[in-house]
Amino acid sequence: MIQGTLEFPTLILFLLFSSGVMEALFPIMWLSQFINKSAAAAKRIAKVLAEPPLPEPEHPQQPSDTSIRFRDVTFSYGEANHPALKDVNLYIKAGTVTALVGRSGAGKSTIAKLIPRFWDVDAGVVEIGYLDVRNMTSDTLMSQVSFVFQDTFLLDDTIRANIRLGRSHATDAEVEAAAKAAQAHDFILALPQGYGTIAGERGTRLSGGEKQRITIARAILQDNPIIILDEATAFADPENEALIQQAIASLTIGKTLVIVAHRLSTIINADQILVLDSGRIVEGGTHQELVNANGLYARLWDNHRRAQEWGLRNSQLPITSYS
Image 1 (spheres, rainbow, N blue to C red):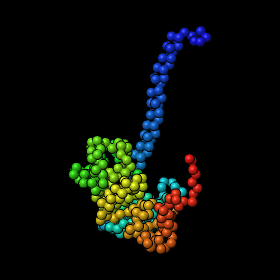
Image 2 (image 1 turned 120 degrees about the vertical axis):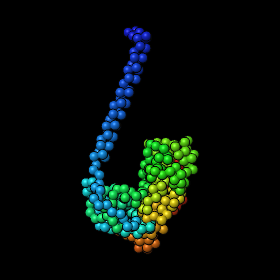
Image 3 (image 1 turned 180 degrees about the vertical axis):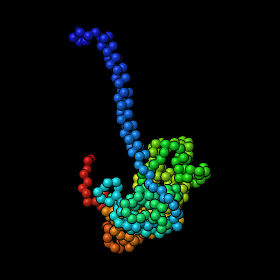
Image 4 (image 1 turned 90 degrees about the vertical axis):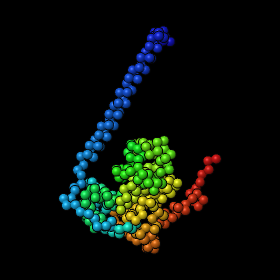
């Protein structure tokens, strides 16, 4: 146009035309991306649906109590080169509190997830009430065990419906009683629609501590005799952790409790502490017994205690001033 070979109206015409073309192309580009994501999700869903269910027993039986026993259990994930558990033997007396501790990858969460039979073991036996879990129906097993994991899962439904997943026929009064015991009732009432508020996909409209208390309320509503807590306060802030601890205290009264813990200060009063290392149980006893034994647990406890006492004032790390 400066050189005189293009008129100004023609320039404006093509500028408007080009923006219109781009507006038409952008949806196509986004649609292509959504199609690719949907195809990948569909493949993952198909893989889950194609997974064969664990076999149900022909002659199902009922456990005699809520004790838990592992007999020479070995287990590997898929085609992993190294088993997650190797020849594990343990016994948890009914109505007691047992803590599983150890370094990351030692096998703590694997033990917790084998109790409700998320997988079948490669060798050995997992028992509840002196009965192999493979001799129970899924319904019987799920009526025995409740679990609260650090990775919470909520559906894109109301708060009330998410709590009621623990017991589908529970009344509104029972749902609210469970929420009160889980220290969740007050924050639920503060939501726009109270118990009718939509939690969002995977609970995106709630904080981590709020989601955790909803899952605890769900477990309280189930009222099963065995409770498994897999680092239930891992991602909570101090205020929410205190509330979650109160909720857990309500949840576990009179139950057989298995705790997977990294914060050793939370399990010093457990009836027994089992220490895992590389898929094996290497120590067991009370807190004081294990500290006196001066083994792996004593080292873990010393590291935990020093971490609690650490601060900038007593740190030897150099502090650089940026003023």
